Length: 547
Image 1 (cartoon, rainbow, N blue to C red):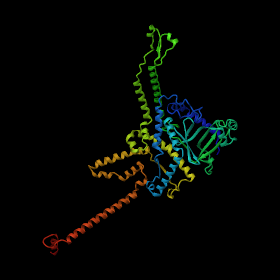
Image 2 (image 1 turned 45 degrees about the vertical axis):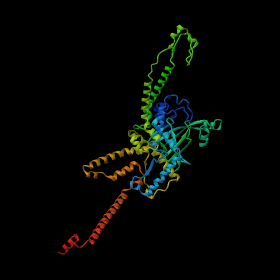
Image 3 (image 1 turned 90 degrees about the horizontal axis):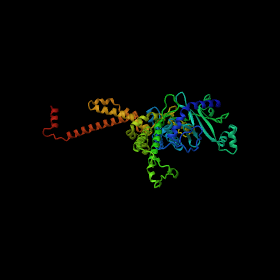
Image 4 (image 1 turned 90 degrees about the vertical axis):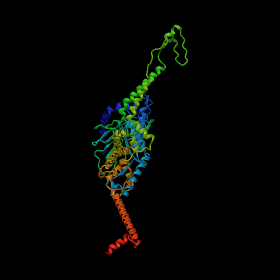
């Protein structure tokens, strides 16, 4: 079903209206926290803005944001270590060797796709967007050579909306393309006159604004498999055009738009940048005040006789100024600057500390500088930070990584590069388990409760040994295996464990029987070699038998 351009333009205006209240805040966040990010009305993507850093005197917050993004990626989807695992809802099925081999093969293919695509660069940008603006937007498309490719958008160049389930399923974005490229892609019959004129004239590389729309398709026919009947539509049009330039579709939602924190039914999220914006502004103001005071203390305004007004005052080091002796007393500083530099430095340090705590700098700088840090080490050192990060990490797995893995898995399946699934897995839903450093550290926090429970049980066992009967050791080990994220093959199933225990019992029973037989044989040997002379145990037994 072809798109209705009039309806698309009306919805675009509606989404613009919904986002308008955020725009002044986004500009401030861009100016003071991430000057390289953000694209607003009247700005062309890729066009240099030499004044982007003009409001930054102290870049501490920008540096902290870079650690934030690097730490989030290193902790959730690091390119250097495994971070996802596939399984079913049945723990025993997951330990079946053909299933384990299939899951492992699919995981390796997914990792290879992510490594050869721009996935890790794109997600790093998404974490920067969330740290600054509270919302990220990732567009996913299939790629002929790399299976998938990702486009990380920045605040201001897109508009989003959510479906009935609260998930982002609609995206409108502005993009700019050279006139020649527009004509080559969609043909000169579909473009506006100004684009066609530029492409055919002397300005083929002039950039023109286009709108791309991705949203659930209404009125499609599921019995047809063409791009115009896929569940999600992708439409391009010129803002002042009379017809769409082109339309295609997606089988899965190609949008991943994580919100660091979303309140109620809000479409756009809030992030650490919102929390620290006032502190970052204060930091710039305090540094500016300190600089002004230092300049005035080194080079104060002066007062002198009017005769020097014509000659000028030489304030350079070693400079000479000549005046009559009776005028010398009239020359000096206009006023004294009694500015406490040490107090100012201490105040600036306090503000920086607030910014660093709000952006989790102490946690992430530790992870970035020691990229082989384990989940246990993180938990031991920064447990309080992990608790505050918990809801945000769930947002990343639910609204970003789940979406990316689903889209990539489906794209790989359509390309025929996934191995055939075992027949028993047909129709089964595959679940995603995250085994990244931060995900495991969150789970390990729950393991501490089990350790405390077992510790109490062992203490009470000294008073009453029967209390250990309350502790289900097998259940605790299964839970620990899940929490720590060890490979399923390292944790035996209940049936395997029971069989092993039965074998051990049989071996122990056989050993006991053998030991008893050995003891009996030794006793009989001793009796057979005993002397029949004199009084001993054997003669006494013989006399007793003879009556």
